[in-house]
Length: 434
Ligand code: UD1
Ligand code: MG
Image (cartoon, rainbow, N blue to C red; front, top):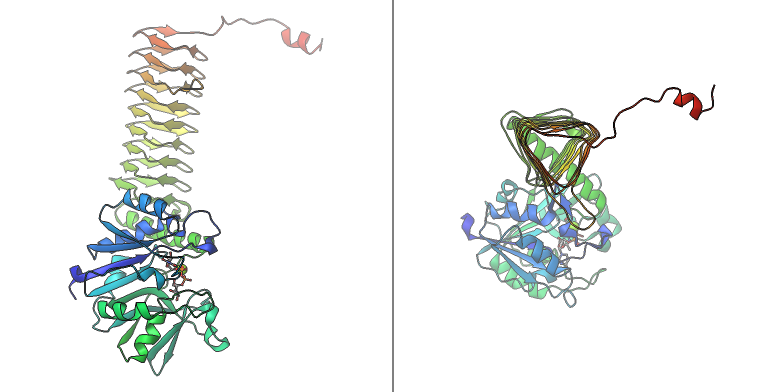
């Protein structure tokens, strides 16, 4: 079968009431991206004609998906009059002779798994797997080696409910099958919905060829509840981290590490236990130490943590970021910030040392302001830099100084603390001990 002759339809119009969430089910995220994003990404690897059926929260679904892809057709289901997965197919127009229909709640699906549906010459190929606990899935009734029908759990008889062979929710149909049977579906069932799965029994009655394709439970897992969401997250995380380790990233206790789908690594990198790296972060030849969080940031030839937090839009190069340092929307090149600092909306240049407890006071209660720190600056411990502020090259800030807005010129020392003195016997007087 020729791949560019395949149309793919993804059903994403359902409410997902079992998620118990105000958010549309297909927009719940796995490894940082909506479930629907993952399915579309795999689908685009094997087809250029992707249709997503929407209805529930359709504006939000279209907006989010359009921010990732610009080549998707959206079709709106008349969910009021034709609810259900069969109803979702009613307004779909099919371009090619073969069509793959995917449920939109299967974020773990891969292009390779989808290709498995394309070899057959049957009228219908449907995915099945065997489960110890088939709860929630449609049961596949097979007699004399032939698929007879799919029975939804809510409609199943006591005997049928015991069947452990279930419908995984992906089907390859010929265009003729869809055009013939979708208009014939009825909603005469427990949920008063138009089930796509009823196409199977109708096609069987007409003696069409229906091939069950045994698929693997992990890749085809459907997400109906928040527990399913977390189970799928574990599987997706395992895939992401295994791939990264195969590409050369060292991970200590990878089961404790969370890395989102858009993160990339280059060179030799180490990620210690308990780290979280999100967004489109890029990590190059760096060591991310235990318990650190890196969000949408770039880290090159640096070490970060333990327990450091790089918030979005941070650029760190040739830099040491130590424990309990928070950086936000800042660029640090050739810098040491070893302990307990907040560096926000700042630009810090080579050879500069940020002492323990230094804070860039970037927010005046209304607006954010920038801090510019030049080369070879020594910022003493426990100093506050009140932005907007510029420290030119070769500046010293004495420990405990509050540097007010403005510019400190090259070569200067800034001190704001009172002159140091000792008061003899003050302790004893204060506590009346002598
Ligand atoms: C469906 C199958 C079930 C199968 C399971 C596999 C039907 C009737 N049942 O059940 O046999 O074992 O998937 O995961 O197809 N959707 C719409 N419009 C609607 C209703 C649903 O587009 O009116 C979309 C949903 O957004 C979802 C997909 O169809 O992405 C599946 O719907 P869902 O309610 O999750 O079906 P299941 O009960 O899981
Ligand atoms: Mg489902």
